[in-house]
Length: 150
Image 1: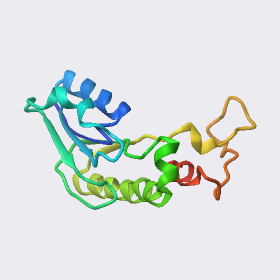
Image 2: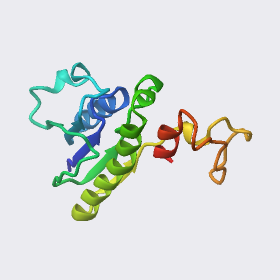
Image 3: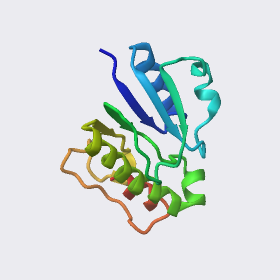
Image 4: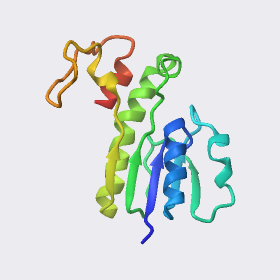
């Protein structure tokens, strides 16, 4: 049975490939992206697919949707982008996650939150075990991304 699935950051590199796979499997996909770093050409091949919707929306702002699952990938991941606006980056991570969790609570949807190895900083432990919190500078130039994804 097909599911109705949100992919936040669905026009980004990873998100667009996830949208491809979910559509191939027969799911209905709602791509939520504000196109601040994602690109419409990454999802253009789905423009005429009746099982694909695009919502041009900043995930830091609330919205609602009737949904079964949510893949939350939205966040500027490139240093060029997150260094230019660290406040927006942390808002996307924190408020975006809160809004995704609000939708999940309202609909009973399951959530997958994409994180990053950046949460470990420059690790002194290799390989990192689940209990390792990392060596991260919460005031450094990467902190908005590192801590927002933690």
